[in-house]
Length: 122
Image 1: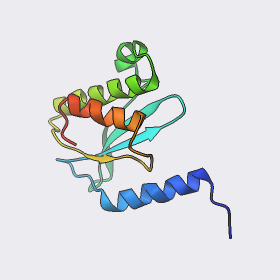
Image 2: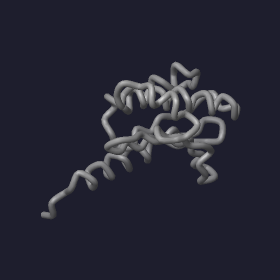
Image 3: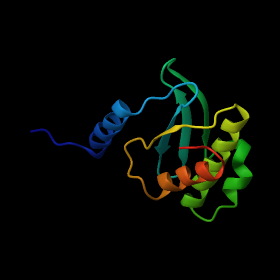
């Protein structure tokens, strides 16, 4: 029996979620990636296989909102609000949330709540 690493276990959870969640042009998949320092989010249309837009906590467009945040959860919340505003400009009102194999708490939850506050229906 081979030893499973954290990365392998996360990949299995990620694929389990991915099999159930599909994004379209009208309702794209909101995919989250969380690293040790930053958080990244993309709106993806799975029917055409394209990323419609993306944003991260180190993006220059939201540097002032993120730099004023006291912790990483507050930064994630700001990224969620910013992606919702960017999606609204593009005419996207709804998305399906893909937590990327991470547990729905902490920074992942803060990003989703920020997006909801920004007007994106998840």
